[in-house]
Length: 493
Ligand code: BG6
Image (tube, rainbow, N blue to C red; front, side, top):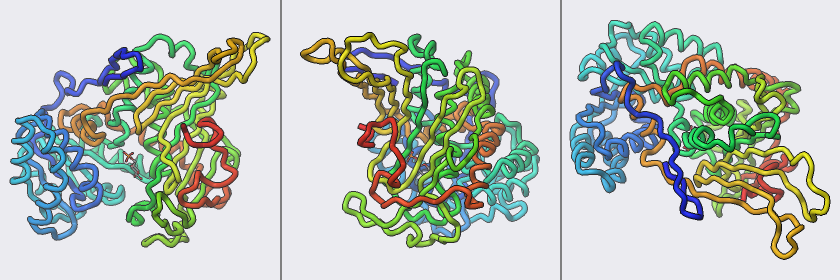
């Protein structure tokens, strides 16, 4: 990853090793995608895989899609072609040959993964080792794993499971138990594609390859940390999933808690799966949402409005939505970390749909200086560091002497564009799965910790203890929700 600053300096942030550790199982030979006729496979998983294969780094992979639907060979071929077209345009010669082969050879089979023996025989027919990717709702993944026997899984098999992993700490623990009866933890990949986002990974470089941040990265110097992921997308036809999830489960329980953990963790000795995942896990074990939850959590749902000229209906009028689910489309929680480094520092995590402006960033607000020399005019504002997750930017707000009167303070922003990663986030995570490296996969204990943080909030919300606010689609959120550190206009600019 290269960071370009305005004065053309180049800083190289470390990239985690992509090879399996010495002695780790060999790379997989087959990828069996369950839920292959679903939206996720077409929109994210296959395009991420295609871009990875376009590098030419993985050769000879057998790819089989399986799903409940009775798809024809043509339907699957269309899906594979659509998902690989872009990658083909921009591939190495070896990658192009590989993608062309997959477009010809990849096939689809109808499969009821919950029927005893069905998944086992699909695995047995493929060249081993096989990676089985469950792009399925958690209850179906659980049932599919329950009907598997360890003897059904040839040596080196890897199981990859999409988020959400379970639906509570209890169900995640049950799913973990089922999985661990089948395979060792190292061969289980719980997928959170945010762990494959270039800028999320670049936090590691920023924090641990520079000496100036770490001494002030603590409660003595940091006032608060905010992580925002406001989307201008509305429901996008995903009511079947989203109306049972909501913003807290969909985004905060997995993605934003992981960003928080990477921002808050101690420096690992090595960027390997053991040290990195231990460091993430120890942050999440220390995380909790303090009460009263009416003060530390907020939720809201969008009403009809307009986004970029597009009319958006009231959430409850969207096709497939059941208003009795009481689903929130905007959620915010304040997480506390019980540790010496972070005690007393709020970590505010917020994400929502159908907002007027995309705002995907972490903002670290520093404490004011202990004493501003008398005689300065103008306003001394706290320093802020922003890490943007699309566009990928790094910005530091600092006070300097202003133009003209040198005793007047003026705010400037040091701004750097972070270069784009070669792979899409799904490709980055998939590469670990194919190579047998769980570095960018969520470890079982961490998946349970993430639920443990949000479970009390979900229970309080379900019991109606926190009111459901309303905002117009296309607005900045409910009136009364201060947009905080990103500037008084709430633009994030
Ligand atoms: C997914 C959520 O996991 O992440 C979506 O289910 C969300 O609701 C998406 O839109 C955001 O990820 P990205 O990579 O598109 O920014």
